[in-house]
Image (cartoon, rainbow, N blue to C red; front, side):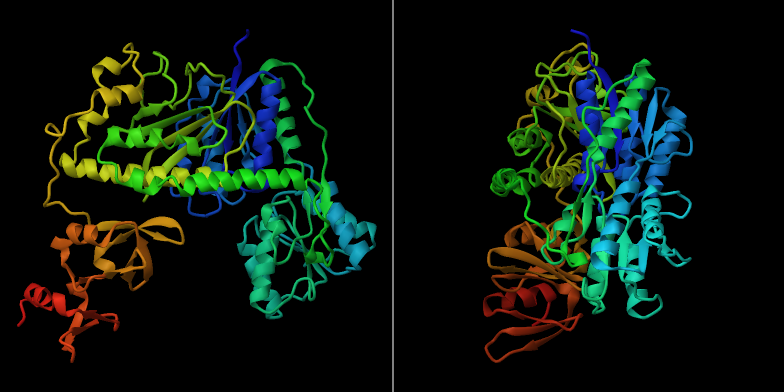
Length: 595
């Protein structure tokens, strides 16, 4: 059997069906034409702060691939990252490259023709709802957008003049919608009959922001979107949209790359199709979906995966691992949480900026050692018994630090889900905690037992995870933690997002309903640690127990007032109060050296 070719895909991240469709179409077409793919992407796509996850694109070994697919279109919210990748490709990539979107350096690019879809949306607003004054919102003035052309075609067809104020540029992100909503509400821009937005994210942001100013959709103005994003199906105001066939354009882009690589032509595996979806944002009633059975099956699958995730105790397992061996063992028992995969590898940065593969579900070939050369990414040139057609490689970053990469292999065209995003987040925080413990335990040196031994270097042949278990040190041999070194930060949860809080900003910790909260001037955060664990950890940092449920920072005490029941009322510097119970009064006074 002929070896399959290799193509890498550069994608900002997966968000909604539209960007997902690009990748799915490429992977499906690649499978038809005998290629396997490796997808390099970020996780924090929906936030303008990427947390430096664009590092995933910096050292890709382009020479190991037969071709490159750069989905520039997916970087609409991160134009700076897209331009950076464009420069990286120009400098380092010597293999055929196809760009889906815009490029300053590559002539081989494919721009999507969404002209007929936007003409259809505008026709619907004019013909079905009698709109005569319409704005187009979004996009960049320097780009000759097919979407804008479709909008203008419809206006011209219905004899509606397009004035200078008809096209409101502003990019592809929600800030342009927020500005327009404010200008409409305060009369700086005349209220139109309808606003045709460049995508569903912008449309949803416009509807949300208008509601804050008391402007109603659809009563006061009609709004449409595009892409078929999940936000178009929101329960408050469903959005008039078109489900564009991005999978077709992804597949078509790959056939163009295939011709560049081989000189042969190929047929796209599917026909172009799109569908108008009316919604309440234009005054229509959204018809029920025809694929209810498929939706219910998908919902049951998602609910089952969420149940597994909720019962996995992933936070407790990964955040508290004492060393790398224990971390790997716990991680191995959690990979079942990643659905539909048939291969998983976990790679970690070493102090000299190399990548150590600390776990893989299959042995790595001798030509690709556990410690990869600097600048070389896993999983190139792996030998895996079970066929893997598509690799997805995502960065593991936390607190501004690059910690490693997770590689997930799939046997068919697929996209990863929001569940994998959360799993990766927990893995990253777990690796961060592990690094902090290692730095404390060996006074800033990388833990020697964390690295493969000489027997597992090139030619050794042992898998990384088995080598780690073999090298596990006994308890007596492990270096003891330096008890004089104490962490100045703790990990807390805010809106289900893990973040760090400096302990000097905490006024007190309080246990409520089996949960522990850190009270700060900026808000309250949930801690995963027990109160007694925090008491032990922070005993040398001025924290003292003042009741069964409260651990107080004495640095935040402003004044103390005795109360009638022999308790103490403590006024804090933020003007809040806490009470020292009678059982803890003596210890509290002794700590403050008062009588």
